[in-house]
Image 1 (cartoon, rainbow, N blue to C red):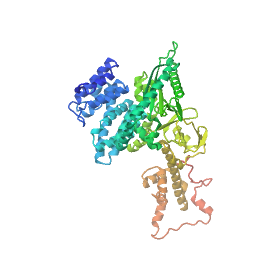
Image 2: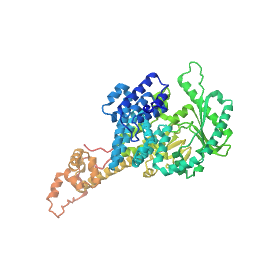
Image 3: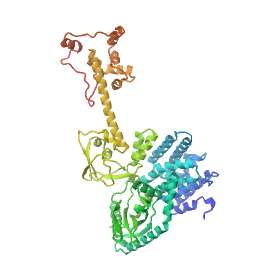
Image 4: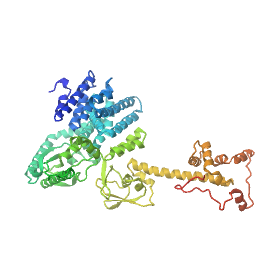
Length: 637
């Protein structure tokens, strides 16, 4: 047992014991710095405050994060909570990377505390919390390690949430369920996601949590016995296989307990009782391939391809052994190796009927696949590719965060868009050329079309999914091959807004109709003015010159863009007669000279020819002032 003054450092030292001595020394230095900085400060639970940053560092070390991240976990509260500690001093002692992570954490934490205080006294708390989360996501785009440290910080806070007031427990748990658990899932860090969900479930729905926990404990011994028997049978079958030992150095087989929140949501979603959930009993098989022997001079890329191919071959061979032992349930085989989940998760899932008659889910994956499934983006620091591989595997969703930041100013709207477009459940579909596209679950062919290109979306007239014609409102599923049918005469329909799911597609559809409505309003405003001038027998072409229109717009509307004048006319914010009086001062004088209550006489020409000769300028043809099309409109100069 570690001494009380150890604060959990013995566990952290054990976790980093395999790292270079220089890294271990830096971790010790960071601990000593944080211990001295937080000396005499306790948490609400009564524990010394230093136990929190040490616990965060332990979580990061278990994830396999690099030494800079572990040190940042130890130091993440020092600048904010301790007077005299600056970012400059952190950089001087521990380097620029540690400073960047700590600085990102500190900015987020300050906003979080401000939002928490506001939430307790005013309705603006939601906006403050939204701004806090937005700043965190913006910081994350600069260095992914910032959010991994933040997730570790949130996980330990959730583990110790019992010392908080009930209303604060609810707020933090809801924020965790809505933002941090989906974020961990999007990063592929299943180990953190599952625990965050179960801890949030405990505070948000305590009755449901207690009921489900009690039901599962009732028959826990019976389930454990069934799993142990199935594990023993499977291990014997795999060891007796003649081919597998040639490829695999180590086979890990263990029972896997399904998480409470996962069971709860599945029961609600499918309307099933606990006894009807097939994958309550589960076995996980992790295969560690032997070192691959390749001819001398083989390049690295070819070697990596060979290792990946062998990993897949081992997994498929293993599932064939499972299916030869136990009867597979039809429709319950999922191949996430050939078609990985959007967060990079790879595994084979199959549900079989064991000899006891109970359905058991078997998951089969390689050691590398398992590390990615458990630790997601954090797992990449365990491999030689480091942060470069992590950046590649994050696909394009970090750039999506940046795009949303540029497009949306309101913090609450930004967080709503992040939840719906980025942190929601995903489906992976394919173009006819095999390009994988990740979309929010429930997306339709219209969402797919606009994701490819705005022009494709605007000219869509139909779609085919897996070779069959389907409505544009058809919901896409994992693995679908989607083909969009376009026409140069195709146009968006307002009905699309009833089934488009992604914020991006809906915004582009709305933008199209706003642009169309603006063009219609400009034409109507132009036509109103032109008709009035003609009715008053005024020289239309002469009065509707750009300079005169700009002056009139400035006087009546306050800008110098004639479009604003036409829009004001269409909206009845000004009248054609008011514009005509500004364009033609002589008309204003004429109208002013008319006796109040008496209409001004309208001159009646003797013939249309006389009228035309008096009104139109002497040109070879009677030029019209009709407005050109929206695409080619220009003002007369």
